[in-house]
Image (tube, rainbow, N blue to C red; front, side, top):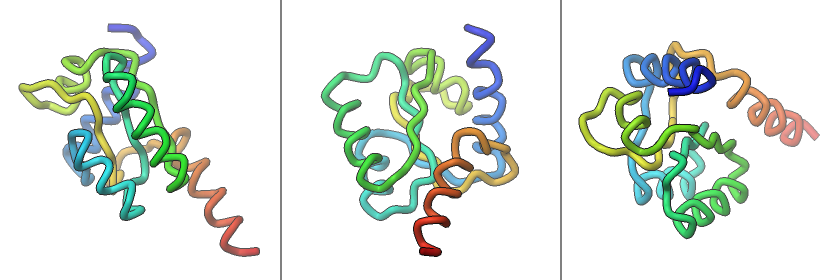
Length: 115
């Protein structure tokens, strides 16, 4: 796997241990509609139609989307699962430091609320 992904893979393992997340397209869409999602991670081989649908809902809910460089098997392995995971939605980061991906969106939301 690429060294670029190793950092996010380690952070994902920390999210799995200490945070809250959901796996799968349908569950991710539910969290995006509710507005509880902090970050959405999409694997590289997710079908284009599903990917565009998730990106559209993420744009509406102002949730950052990270395109995972690996395929769904690598994303599943990063989540410590023995099955394929094409989409993952993080609702609580726990002890993980995903500031570069999540922090920018939170600052934007806080600024827009304070006006």
